[in-house]
Each structure stands twice: as structure tokens, then as C-alpha cells.
Length: 570
Image (cartoon, rainbow, N blue to C red; front, side, top):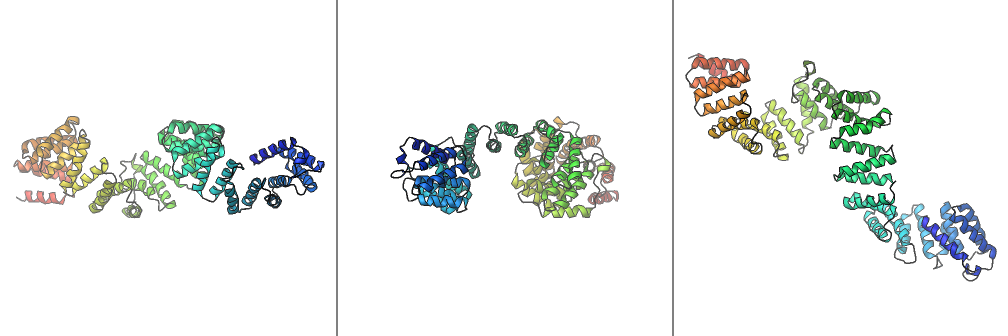
């Protein structure tokens, strides 16, 4: 309404410069009416609308045909919320071409306030192209209605037209920033919000919007500055606080996050998300006891919260407290049984994929039936697009010796990330176990080309080549290179010994395999390899002894049992 007030002031100034007769369309015979009108403009300019209304009414009563006075009454009635009166006065004024435009604007505002947006639009669109109206104000008003009606394209065009008239308007630039953001036109959104901040440096909403976009496009340093500026203007702004916290988490700036949230945490001013973020900062910074205390307190005070249970379980897994973590993960699944991510941690610890526990007391002891129940439920939830999920299922099913299922999941993971080192190794291992050496070699060759100095890959590649019986000279070079990096590795020595065996160099194979046992200990596979070497050398007694040691380490090798039985029966 500021533009209307400005027009009123200008009208009042103009009146003062005129002869009394000029106020009426022809002549103004009643000087009291003129004085009352001027008093009305005085009070209107100062925002005293009730007093202005009284003086305009007095003036109109004395000059009932004067359209200018009725226009003033329409304007003041609108300010006072007398919508019916505003409609009546402005409708009466429409017949006078001199005041038609302003009367139409008042009518448009009345229709808008009464919820008749289509009627308001019609009135404003009729005024849009006229030169005798305040076009900028009309365009702003139009854009507001377009936005409320969901006509975003029309709103954008109208606001851009308004900006061409007056580029420094805060409302126009802010609304354009919002529209550009929703449309994904982030460069223009940034430009618009920068302009808003330039016009009004204390407008925290514009700074927050600008910070969010800068954060999204990767301009983290600048985003951080604006988030901090918002918090300086509005210390209680939780959106800015949480966004800045998230930025610090993503950037690994955990100490900054602790510094940001610690004072508010101590004052009890953090919301639920803020407390969770503070706990995460402590966790990521390695302050596990402090993090656990916070999260457990949140559970005690606020009840079961999935986000909190998830982080506690994550912390306990990182501490290798698998039994404790398993308990929290079960509670989490009870709350969110259809959230696949909840099953990931549980399956990791239930199937011993996470590694050895910190102590025997923290080992997960759970029935096969219970583990299988969670596994089957999770298998129905895993997405074809989840690399981590498919990889985990591949590892678990491979350990369970359900190789067809394992292959299906690992191949799916391979399609998602063809060059992932862990998945390629797992696939190669699976194919090696199944005797599908060509498939294994295909993956190992790819890995070796990507990691030519990795001794583990060189060892595995060389061993599988030996199993297939091809490129044995190359396989031997691979193992010698691996042993140059880890000369005391018994498993590398076993691979070299097996390559020598395949090359029919049985004497050197036996020597190398004996060294492998010295380094690796009682390994069933190495003892069996040594037995095979002795057998080829004709040393039957030594072969049987080596096979017996292999069976002691792995009593379930039925194939070897038959071989030993046959040897002893000769």
C-alpha cells in the first residue's frame, strides 16, 4: 500500500497548489468541503486512517458528486478493512476516466482479499499495459496472485518484467530467487538472492536460501559464511544451525561441529536433530563415550528413536561390541521393519562379516534360524540398485556355500560398480571355489591391471593361474613380486609352491611348501599341497603324514580322506 500512500501525498500537494475551484470537476463552491478534504489527506499521510475517513466523509457529504473525494474514501475504506464500502466507492468512481485506473486497483485488492482471485486478475491484467498507472506495483500484485494460484511461469514472466522497471526491489528479487530455485536454475537463483542480501543485509531468510544453494552446488566455504551470518542475525534459527552442522559432517569438520553445538547443548537449546548431530560429531571425532552418553540419554528421555538407535548401533559396531550392537539393531528393526538399511548392520554382525569381536563376551550368539529369518526378510527388501546391499548378500551367501545365490548378488553389484576392488575379489574367490577359473582370471586380470603393485592381488592371480595350469611362468613372476614385498607371508609361499608343483618342479615345490607351513602354521590346504608334492616325489610315508595333518586341520575333507585310505591300503 506504500505506493497508494505516496500517490495520496502527491495528490494532497497538488491540491494545495490549486485554486479552491479546481477540486470539483467544474467548481467547488463549498470551502468547508475543501478544508475537510485537505485535513483528510493530512491524516492519511500520517497513517491515522480513522480520522482521515471522518474528514473525507464530511467532505463527500458536502460534495456528493466529487469523484476524487470518493476515490480517497475507497482507498481509506480498504485500509480500514471496510471492503463493502471500498467496493461501493471505487465502483462509483470507475465512471470517471481520470480515476478509473486507481479505482480498478482498489477493486482488485478488494476482490483479492475476499478470495476472488480470478476477478482480481481480470482487473489487473486490464491495467497491465496502460501507461497512466503505476505498472511496477500492478506487476508485483499480479505476480503474487499468480504464485498463489500456482501459475509459476506467469509469475516468473511478470516478476522479470517488474525487475526490468525497478531492479532494486527486494520482493521481486526474492520471489524470483525462490522460483529459479524450484526450477533448478541455480545460477539465476544465486544472483537473485545475492541482490536481496545486497538490498537488505539483515534479511536472514534470503541469506539462508543463498547459503543452501551455495552448499548444494559445492561452494561450501561461501555457504559456511552465510550460515554463520544467519546465526549471528538469528541465533535461534534451527534450519541454519542444522544445515551448517550437516555441512561440517559432510566435510569432516568434526571439531568445528563440536565447537558450534557444544554451547547450545550445555544450555539445553538444541532440538532433537541438533542433539543427534552433536552426538555424531563426538562419535566421528573419536569421543565415543561422550557420544554414547548423549544418545543413550536421548533414548531414556524421549523413547525409542530410529535415528538414535541407528547411531548407537553404529558406534558399538565400530568398537567391535557386536553383541551389544545386535541388541540395538533388533530394536531398530522392530520400529522400522521395512527399512532395508536397518538390516545391513545386523547381518554384518550376525554372519561375522564385521570381523572378530573386541572380546568373547561381545561375540554374537544367535541361532541359525533367527539369522536366516532376518536374512530372508532383508532379501525381499534389497534394491537392485543397492551396491552395498547386493555385495553384502553375495558375501554372506558365499560363506554359506550357497554359490548360485552369491553369484547372482555379486554379479548385480558388479553391474553397478564394475571396477570395485572388493566385489571383484569376492567374485574371483567365488569362481575359484567353484572351479570356474576362467571367470576368476577375468576378474583378477582386471584387478592386477588396476593394482599392479598389490601383493595380495598378485598372489591370488598367480594361484588361480596355477589352478588352471596356464601361464605358469607369468604366475611364478607374480608370486616372486608379491614375496619381494612380503617375504615372510606363508600363504604367498604356498601359492609359489603350488605353481612350482604345476610346473613339475616337485623338489622345489616341496621345499617352498615346507617354508610356507613354517610361516603360516597348520593350514589344511598347505599340508595337502605338501602331501601332493611328496607323493609326486615317491615319498609315500611323508605324503600320508602331510595328508593326516591336513585332515586334522580340516576333518570335513571327505575327498582327501578317500585318498589317504587308498594310500594306506596299498
